[in-house]
Length: 361
Image (cartoon, rainbow, N blue to C red):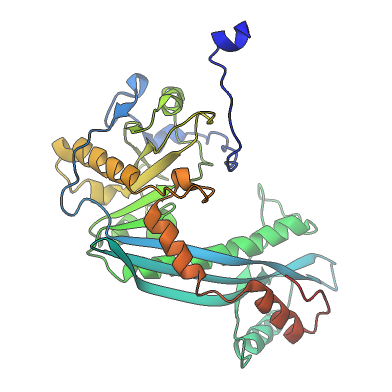
């Protein structure tokens, strides 16, 4: 008991599990600029003022994507015997627009896809399969060719899970493409995307064509902070943020690199919570951030962060309510209402493929 009192022991409740943090990348200091707002070794939590946002500073459109699917069959290559999972999914993207106090559907796109590692088969057979699936009269599907999974420049062709994950990632990439299309439908309205911006904007030259795009990242798997930064993040209270900093893939930024300014915001608090609970990471393309006068950048970050906290989901029945925004939850619900029940898709596919199996999903 004395030990726990001495070291601030506290209970924690059950919450959605975060991904494990990746190991620190080699030479990552070439891609991180931690001292833009505060010196890196002097970081401390910043209390957000109640100042209302200015016109054009907060999102009015909200972009989200959905993915429904899983592996429904497995193939074996006759020559090598590799297991090839066949991943069936329905993917899409949606944009919701704020009209007064209402959210209306501004854009949506849906597609049914089949992804699998195609390197294992002769290309003419893959083309024939793609044509047959695309021309199903009641159930057209698009084939997404998937590369062999590689880990540390090696390939484990007999690992079913690696093959399945590669096919799933390919379907997820198609979902990101639909989000990019939804985002590009309106470049003049301030817009918020659920997740990282790089898969949606790709590069600084593309981001420069937009007025303002904000990304909100709920799941943290990349190690982007130094030791003082981690201490600051874990010390955040509700309504506080870390200093903002810049991250990029390369020092100078390339054609396929999207440097962003980013910071963490503590959205909520409460008893029995993990130290990193309810913290989101906010991103803005650096090319857009630079347009603002340097003396006003801190005020802009504060006002946007406060708006994000005010827009947080308050539905206790929603598992990720502490890190979710109400407009994004509404967008997800709106898009999912357009999806076909996956059990129906699965059974149709297996029937067309002539694969015997359970009639349940």
